[in-house]
Image (cartoon, rainbow, N blue to C red; front, side, top):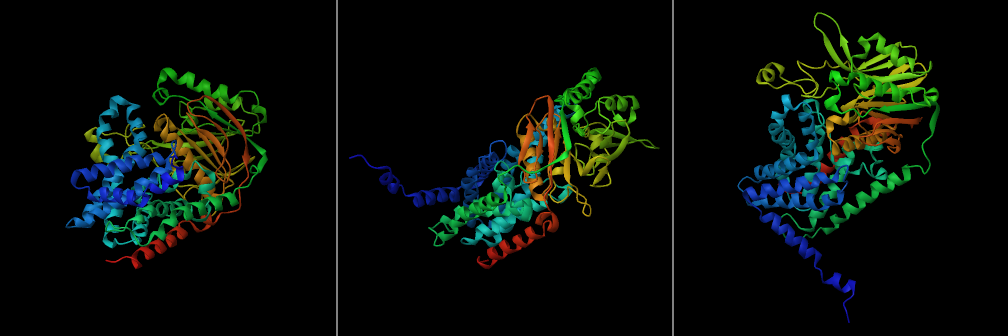
Length: 532
């Protein structure tokens, strides 16, 4: 009689196979160990948009623990662990943020020569945070508690990565859930950093099937953390998410214009007229008479709009009297030395400029050149132009203009900073973000950026309206659900209603305080139950 599936499964010694895998990773040495770590990091990057292959992390993160276990044979285990962490981080950031390289080929004559340096220095620099986490964690490395020590260390350095040197909190571990609405609702309580901490501990927990010395663990109960924590996130999200669509403000109707202009053609004189005509024609499509707000993406007009009254009038001519245009534009401040700003302008149907906002969180090397005096003579220039680039604005603020609910304007990557998307003492009713994701390549970058927007909405309990030059333009409700969108690499318009905001979330009140308390708790567990 043929064996049943159950009989076959019982013959599979799963714990034994896991122990064998752990032994293999522990035995890796020298350069081979670093190549393995880098490969694990590279595979881990597939957990983010647009792949969302997060189950891979249940394999790669425990393997990282077992590689660090093997450092016990070295004279300075913490230094070896730091090398392993750096190699893992290098692969992780090289693959996860590879889209940054596309920005350097837009103007290939000026910037392509920097690509080899970017491919090494950028992921290599970010990987130093993982090196710090692994090295520090290895100082208190024992038993099942090493999962808490490493998880807390990684969560702490991810918070640092979001703040040091202007910060780059992109692809934080919690963003692996951006494709599953129920899984990220807990950010309304403790933000993306708190979600990242919970996610890290859950993903590291399977490593405890083997203890730090390579033997079969006596504390396998800790394995239950993975399903319990992940199920807890899902259940909370399932309860929080309403079955019905979020209520909308019937008095606010939106039209988002997505011109889909290639970055290589955006500023060339021979395309100016065509690019301008695309904006005007899309805006004037049937139904404009019912729209109260029209939104153009970041730097959408092919000229400094506020410096050209005729262009302002031309834009106003296609707008109904009560309609407001929110457009990205370059703003020029005249004076002894001209200053340039990456800005948003609110323009009335009569052509009057109602308000402006200047981007406050500029992109290093993209919009300004750090250490300009040193790098410029070497031939390094900022990507979006020549000279010292843009001047930063005065800070995030809430704008109130006629017939438009109070909103917080955000330009491009300003949206990626948790807790920094609205003025502290004047909560808006919605977040309006305009971007040009054509800088981010044709696939992963724009989708990762969209996922960040979804989680920011759930954190704040505020709808997000996203206008993107090449897509994805979208309206996102205050739970982080996309209610309508216009896909990548498409030209067109998106007509939609504005969802209403929710009451303030706990995170919007407390910020990262709850995460820091969680981090202290996880660190305490790791220290108390580990041995020096």
